[in-house]
Image (tube, rainbow, N blue to C red):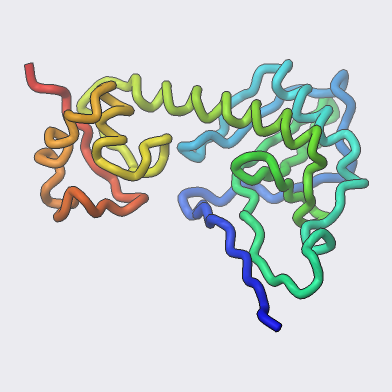
Length: 204
């Protein structure tokens, strides 16, 4: 009998060490001082109360969530998607809770381990996380040029044309990025995620 191996996409988070979780029971929404999320540039960014309350409502029954390992069918070996998006809750009493979501909200990591988010809550989290990613992309792409950019930070497709589309709104402008980064990009068809490049201002 064949052994099936499931390997999910791995998202590295070596850029920053997120604070440890201190989950000891999440507070109700009327006892929240601040919400914050770790954005795509690995910086903590304050979250609107409406968004934070939505996340908290999705985690209301977190103690009843199934652990990831218990949901894997017998005979199947797999590695879960790492939970890499930090979400921080600070209550009015000063208690801090930090949980970490996978990129699309399927999994949440807390002191109980890696838990599976129920379907209804997963859908709500996926929509919210997608909106946050779009906001991150827009913020990154709107910064004054020239600027430094780490490939893969935003939704760039990991191609020079994708990066040109992100910053210039025109994928055909990729040669300008290539010319400005010949010392770090040897082949325009092969670029490495995590490489820091310069995004030049377009020539007039």
